[in-house]
Amino acid sequence: MNNQQQKWLYLTVLSIVWGSSFILIKKALLGVTPVQLGALRMIFTSFFMLFFAFPSLKKIQRKHWKYIVYTALTGTFIPGFLFAFAISNIDSSIVAILNSFTPFNTLIFGALVFGFSFKKNQFFGILIGLLGTLILILKGADLHPNQNYWFALLIIIASVGYAFNANLVKKYLFDLDALAITTGNFLLLLIPATIVLSCTDFFVSFEATQTKLTSLGYIGILSVVGTGIAKTIYNKLVQISDPIFSASVTYLIPIVAIFWGFLDGETLSLVQFFGAMIILLGVFLVNKSK
Image 1 (spheres, rainbow, N blue to C red):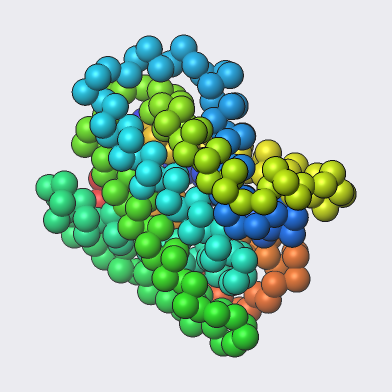
Image 2: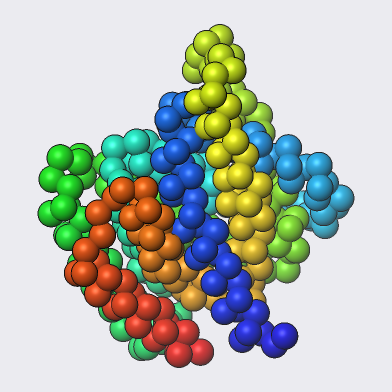
């Protein structure tokens, strides 16, 4: 499989996995609080990565650790809690749509902070993708007037974190195995996430009810597939392509998320479908520039 085929395979797999994550978060929140969900997801992922990929830590050199810390914070720790709070107040499909601001932020901060260049088609592709995203947001707000869209700001902040994460991986961790990056991230997050969880009433009030156990099951799937495996694939995608193309996965995620939301009773309109098609055109133009 050549590099181009690998890029599209990784992008497709990530869009399906992360697009499905939003409905899993929504279901998991029926049994735990947003803070508990964020902390448990990191703890579960940490144990999974350390159990199966501990030897990969040997590949991390001293020069890498500073950036492992930065990517752990910007790409996982902070967004993990922000997304949980947002989905507890806004439909999961809308949150996935808001996350589509990530490619735009990746381009802007990549150019202003990290000195990366971009091509004309990438810029137009991102603008077209944003247009499709705005159509989805506005129609979503029209269909759900009772939801508090101030929580959308949390997703915008999280998308900035993802933008920094992608650019950091590309510029400073390009020579490090993708599995080692992910394992290093979660080694560092295990203790902070445990401290955060202990500050809630989880250990005091947890009861093995059907709802609680089901929530833990959803979190387990999120941790292993949606976080551990998916983040490793994403880091590899960044390394073999570029931050802008990699971040364009967030333009595909809403299409999957809206599908799951529709099955769960969330409203889907023809206008939203049209917006999704515009997003796909934006992704195509971002990649065409290569």
